[in-house]
Length: 141
Image (cartoon, rainbow, N blue to C red; front, side, top):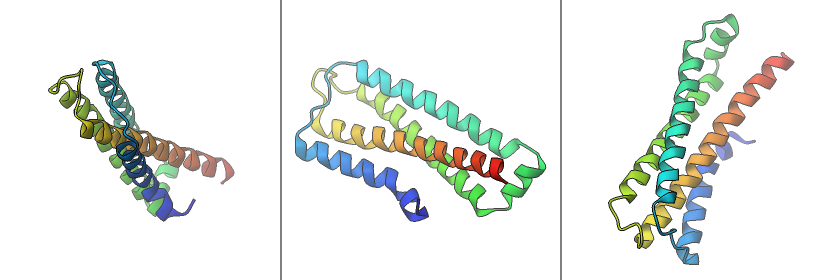
């Protein structure tokens, strides 16, 4: 995948989904279940990604030291950072949703939630793909 596409597709897809929800008239589900699930997803992803980042930074092997000298390592750390921030934002937005009436959330809330959930999932997938690419390249080389 082209690096420019790789860098931007999570956000382009999230904006596209949010605009589609806005113009498609999607209503955010009533009740607190989706809000609780959003907080849980955000917390799980944040924990997993933060652990991955700390492992990637702290592993001290010759192969990892060689990887640190490449641009790929900096890019991987950037992708991890973006995925962690997206997950934190999703969780925080889920918490903020409890400050609205859960039986009638404002329309903008659903649009922003779609933007955040799509960007969270796609930045997580991007990090996963980067790690898998790294593992495959180590097997080949």
